[in-house]
Length: 497
Image 1 (cartoon, one colour):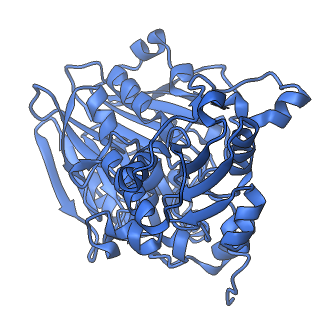
Image 2 (cartoon, helix red, strand yellow):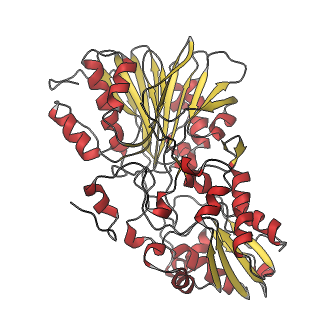
């Protein structure tokens, strides 16, 4: 991309009117979801829609789909959930042979329509659509480099910077693959990418493979592939899981088939362990099993490490339930449901009354009084971040008649923020970074509190413990974080200038 003015992209941007804010939760906020599909004979926009629908848990701020047909690109993206952004008549206008889709939770760049993805650019070889899951850590340096080369930006996202870097390399004479590989050399951090071009579809993971990306083949088809953040997106559109995109790999999908090459010299797998604990859907596959199975084993290990006498084991819906089942299996304490989740709670534009705000948690979780009354309860959850929601849940259980409430967490204490695509608070707002387990126990109002050990969490993966990023528990970041970025979140650490 040169300093001179570029021609306007040949695409149609369809409008939508939804706007609104999502209520914050006391959890690490999800990474984004990406999806790509190449299937000339199929309604690719509809396939992308349902794939994104399955990935909705990975981002609820905005959604978008871009379809490419020769030199024309059609784009529709807006704030809101997938089902709110897209309607049947909208999808019919998104014609093409391939589609790139995205669901977003913002980590770099604020939450508004201009930052919704896919990012779309025009190059000398045609239009480019890019969807990104992850977070670059060298955004300031990369933006300065690209601005010095005469590049311009329309958004505040690191995702657009990656797209601009590719577009510039194309405009300097490189083909799509060489341009992409050269652009990735400028990028540091976590990025799983789906990139649509007139010639084909790319799937890319950073050299550490921090965020997941899988390859599927449409059922009954030949050379009709799907790329997605998780296998649950393949299931919903009838695609068979083939394999993961490997760290530092670029897969190139055209109508002739799939090819691949490794563009990174020394890839070293560091998959985010929180993908396995919480972010990815329990029915998604990792390491040849569903994550439900891994989460059950977390609960089993938790029971071995920190069992206590009780009458009932319950999970905090939905993410704490598999670990609670595993805890019950090893401890012998009966499992039961103590909280019912209102699964239809979404965005509301109506402010609740003061009394409703005080009861807070009951908008989403309601206790079963006859199950809890007079019982010693072990409540299992996957994590505690700020502690605000945990405190409200504990109070609700006690108000419902629970005699004792013991909390067990199927991961270690979260003491450090993430810089690789998960929106955790800065360190001062992480309750475990500033408080002992005993202090947290008192603050959230439980009779006892125990976390799963770091060693136990990694052992039950059945994989090499060194192949995971667990920096949020240890502060050991596998990708170097520039000092100016560190200072934004690691306010409890000494960072040398």
